[in-house]
Length: 251
Length: 251
View (cartoon, chains in turn blue, yellow):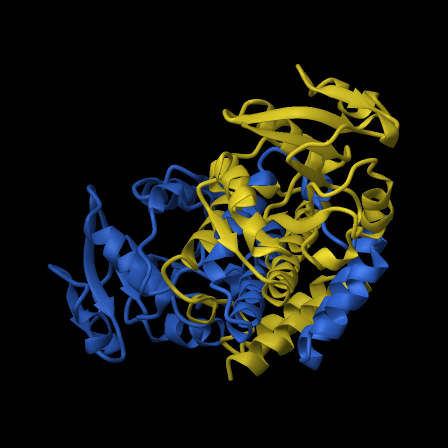
């Protein structure tokens, strides 16, 4: 049995709380949240604490808070020499306090509170300061996911940046598409099969091979028509920059 | 029975040739291609012609060529008063020659030759100049797709622009993510669950609600770390512009 404390109540913390409660061989012992209401609806057996001093040692403590708060929170833990990990893609384990053993538990997924996820499919990228701690963290990760990777700091950073491009920025382009549809009274969901096929295609073709559209065809007439159609300077600037980038990278 | 001619041999034309050959109640009569080899591997019973004058009248002629060639090709057809449609998202039916009845047959999908698609799921956006031609074109479209829409020129244009953002530009962001992974020896396919979830999430949340990442959290430290990590000016410029756009649109 692995005893586990989870610190935090944001999107990632909430999903971790939900999944670890239902996981065999893991005892979700305590949850720290500044506001009890933020997590109380999620919690069955674990104890919720709002004061760091009420936390008791656990085999693993997952700190899932904003990057800027990790150092402070890890310092506030009232115990020593336990394994303490954070869930950030862009911070090293060095940011954690020296009083505990350190590591990283980075689930590579986009978490929204209102949307359930299947953890089995979520890649979890692990790193520990001490080699001998890796097996414990790996056992914890494998209890919820089939896709557990040992990934060092530099590679985790590159995955995080790649994820910003392939997920966060992609979602924003969906948002711009959604706005264009709404402004012209076209239901956005007509685009769903296209959005799905675009995500699916890169499983069998490289994104470079999969590229289609006016930019890669150097179809200047259509590009100009689209720019004239867009009345918003921000959308025009994004259209121009991404068109140039497609043409530069696929020339 | 509807008789059909298809003019063209590009990505869209090839997929249309493949599907209409297997469609009940449609006779794929002739295919025009400048180079016979471009389509001969796809064609079972239909006749391939390389000279416009060898084309015979058909109930419907689909012209699937680059936007700039539509007018010329429609002019070169050796018959009159048939229904002739193009497959462009950004051209009106007016671009077609007056000698035939006009319309648009716009399949809203990204087509690559090397990737099969399921036409049943592909939205097809139809428009005809004459109201009385609509039923014929609708019957043709419904023979291959369950998602047939009557969409006028302005709405089709907005769908096309929205599709450039939500598909062509999205694929390019996958390409940039792919490059970042390759440069740092991380397998790109670790990102597939994230990419799928990003596409899936907007079926239940609006893209605005689904937005996550450093930009929307105004996590300036991570944003600066990512910009320092990127060594390519083009990627930096895209990172900056899309971060700004997320913050402006979700402030």
